[in-house]
Amino acid sequence: MSILNAADMDWLAALLLDVGVAEIMPRFRNLGDGDVQEKSSPADLVTEADVNAERAITGALLERFPQSLVLGEEAVAENPALLDGWSRSDKLSFVIDPIDGTFNFASGVASFGVMLSVVKDGEVIAGIIHDPVGKDWIMAQKGSGAVLRRSDGGESALKVAEPAGAVDRMIGSASWQHMAEPERSTIARNQGMCLGSVAYRCAAQEYRLLASGYIHFALYNKLMPWDHLAGTLICEEAGAYVRRFDGGAYLPEHIDGGVLAATDPDSWNKVREALWRP
Image (cartoon, rainbow, N blue to C red; front, side):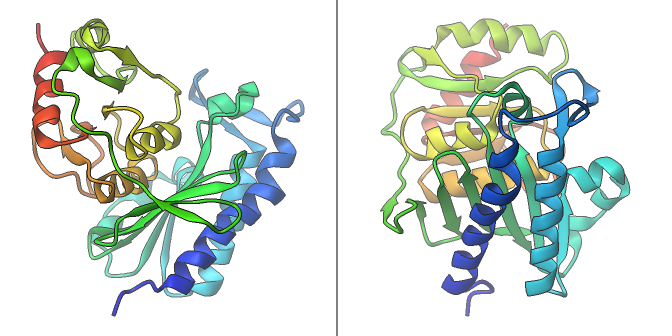
């Protein structure tokens, strides 16, 4: 029997919707003085919406799953020790990004999302990305495919694009901002070989584009679990090929080594070769 049943997935989706309605959207384009603070840089922000949304999601999860572990981005920002060994816990674990794309949210740009993944025994078993603006979700359970669920309850299967064949026919997202030189400049330069690029500063929306068949790859260097576990599972269930930069599997324990998701293994190899070309 699955650890999470259909009712649990419905409940999780509804929770993210409710928190979006109550805590996030009332503050969108309505943040007051003192509601936005810097964390590590002017591009790394936290708002009152992030804090309150994570608090609400965490409380609801612990009420329904009292023996579970909840790992939230803002909780870890306050106590980095929470990251130590969390993925090796035998507890059912929920990983939360209350607002992915906080810079956009704080800037009044409608490109952000709420991300939640479920981990058990070191494996991601479910992922949900909610769009509070569109009030819909992309979601997946491991081995069951990925779907877009609309606000009216309708669902449609998600499937990555057909392979483009060559890098100059691909559209992709390459987040090089957290890379060290010379890799940073190499990736930024070589991305110009692609047919097109997207840079939403929001993994939630970029993974949605990949899983929905609109782009061919997405590349990230900084691996925090709340940013990538839900999206990579959803993309894999939509048919994508996901690996770290060295070709190894991406696991919940990884916080470095980068991740590249592409439509298929051949495209993955072509992107990996082209973008790192000296």
